[in-house]
Amino acid sequence: LAQLRDPSFIDVQQQYLTAKTQLTFLKAQYSRKKTLYEGEVGAEQELQQARADYHAQQSRVANYAAQLRMLNLNPDDLGDSGQIRETVPLRAPINGIVQKVKVRIGQYLEPRSTLFTILERQHLRVKMMIYEKDLAAIEVGQPVYARRVEPDQPPLKGEVVGINHGMSDQQQAVTAFASLDTIPASFKPGMYM
Image (cartoon, rainbow, N blue to C red; front, side, top):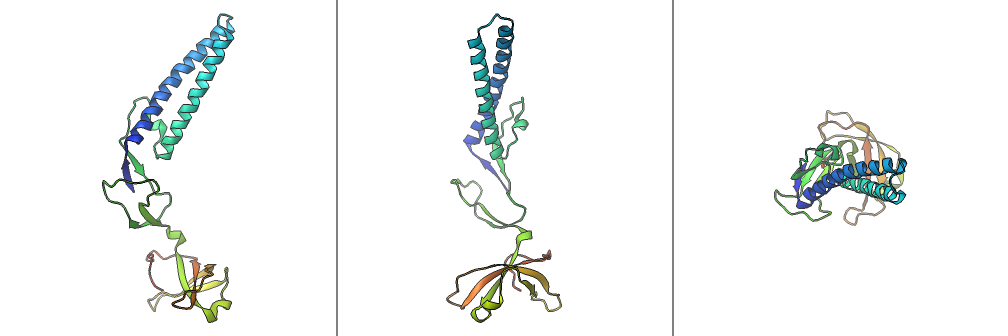
């Protein structure tokens, strides 16, 4: 959807690479201390300290790797080359259609900013207005048939999946939603039936 740029993204990549390099050193040091201890040349306290340092560094590397994955960056892609990315790809959490773009190029973003409105095609719903006199005849799970505006099109079968409890003051009607069994490719959000 977009590319995000922030100095903190560069910092976490650098911290990960530094921590990973330090982990390699601490692993070798732990291995040396263990060999010396097993040969009865090294002190047990030195072995314990080397083990603690090594495990603490493993935790740091895992922490930075998790932060990178949250940014949609694969820690393995950084590798030993140290290729740091200046931008982070923003991917949609769902497969759908971008309905609204609420951001401009170069805009500074606050945490929790809404950048895009995305609709999942497989979860498109038919919104129906049920008038007060018909309300008792409608229930969740009930089959429905929706007709398109074009007169020569066959009705679409679906099922009532939700009924709002509040009555609209203007129309004296309740909003209900239906899920269709099949959604034609020509359907777009906001179309009338």
